Length: 460
Image (cartoon, rainbow, N blue to C red; front, top):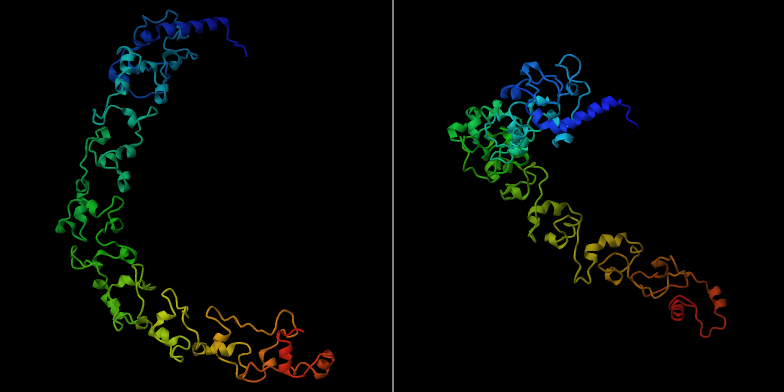
């Protein structure tokens, strides 16, 4: 895209840049005559950066300025600066004008105080009076930016001091601790709590801090988040669960705050004596309540059985009495033979037991299929083992595998009560049918013992 600016205007602008490159630093450095106070403390007005407010004082003579006045001015009024006048400060001087500096009037820095370079070498202090009088150092950028004078990052900076700002202190005005902070005086403040909180100390009567001599080291009991009970550090005896909501006088009712016992029974003997399920006093329960209870509540006690291997019935007599068949079967009271401390589900070890099962398992016997046959033997171990009730009896006569004898009950063949050795084959196998099937078989006899002798596995 071609530049449509008229040739005379181009020449004028070209000469403008050349003149500023040549005369810029020395010329602009004497652009105004004013006092230092007028330059630095004068009110900020809505004036173009390249213009000047007459209330700041007269402009210095332009003796060393370029002779072409139209470079900056227009019309017959020398107070008016050209609308199209511009100066690229970073391109021409190598110094970028950021934040509030970008809108500052040129003559605020380039004036009759002397070469601007000498002031720039001093940093902020070259132009700005230090209201802190050196008390916080000379690096203004730690707290201030170029956008405005509002400080930033004070909390992070304060964290590097002996008194980091946390909790309620983050909302306190600076002057509340630093007298004179309104005018930039941030001299060292007393870091002791009582230096600021003397009135809070005098108001603390429950308990009476002054009477008890609690006038220093507030941080031993209080947090910076709150003066109330929620911020109290009860380090000697941790206040957890229900204890956290108690008023101090619930335990410190005589104004005694040192040497109180820490054991539960010291406060909870009445609770111990009033407990009847189970009856703590009658059962001679120990008074170290924390074995079964926690600070959340008295209900839901959980007793640790770690290390307990016998004597269960001392606490669990009622459980024994109500358990099925324990009294009727005269079960022993050494509960640990069958039970563990995690639950009441029995886990009896049958190691070494080889007979007498019926003494404990009569109910299981009575409910088993076919066992109600008169004379069915009660030596359970003949068919069962201690791993489970599934029968491990091996029937030499095939009554499975799809044979004709599948799904028969025991007493279909064993018809003589109490004697499983006697077998009746003739009730099911008709004599006429058997005669026709055994034609040509020598020594054939139609009786049950002969059947078993010739067909021991139930097959032809």
